[in-house]
Image 1: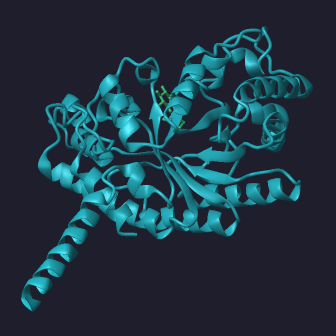
Image 2 (image 1 turned 180 degrees about the vertical axis):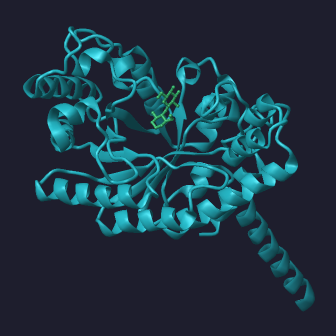
Length: 372
Ligand code: 9MR
């Protein structure tokens, strides 16, 4: 009798363990719960509902979305007196219907910027007063439209160079560094509840890191809001140096803001390959530019997978300071890296493949998130 009671309690313990195991989260967003949001960027096909397989993945794995393109100034405000909100409206509705956090990308950026924004019809730069009025009108219209529905905005994107100097964009040429605090002020006025972010690529670079830290201090000194810094995190297979990347996370956290990986992806194509093959001569330049057109060799996948793990070890180490990790696209076929730095090539930069299957890295990231 005693023995059978032992056996029963052992069985119960075993079943409890197994059911606990079965319940441990199997999606990225569930595994990341309580740590940070897990996001992805939506393209037109997803926003319009055409990419049904992509949408299924978005709903299953992600609890944050951002527009890959449709909220940038060119698409959303193509002419001075004309806005085009239809895609952006749909993105926001999709987020709300599916209980997904929406962030806005991006208000003030030198790229995908309609020419009229900073230039007069004769090609000359607008006056400071005129540009301020245009920025204010643009920001209050776009941010105001989605007031209370968008958690936070990439207010300014890519304004600082790797050496720490300011990019000589039309905004800078007209207003100097002042265009940044102005943009933060206008955004806050348009939606006082919205979080405000400064977003940039190559944030591992020392010069850029230092100027971003100074910028945070300057905004705060003026009483302006800045909640987080967006480290875009477009990673290469051998660059950047991950120690420098981690130093930037630490520096931004020490400056008192949260950190978000806002455009995470990792090219599987070694950049050195093109240069080396072409330099050797005799190599097929087309092949060097697009080496994995017929599929990613296992060895190249393993290299990508283990570097992803290394980056995510850093992310996990700093998860208390990180509020969101957003991938720049859903599946490999969606990635901008298929057209950069070489047009029309086949890259493998995202956690889901071209057939919409999860790569082994998805399971590994879930495991890493669950074990933290
Ligand atoms: O992924 C975007 C691509 O579809 C656009 O053609 C490109 C235009 O510049 O912008 C890409 O997204 C960029 C993002 O908005 C800002 N950081 C760099 C991203 C990749 O270029």
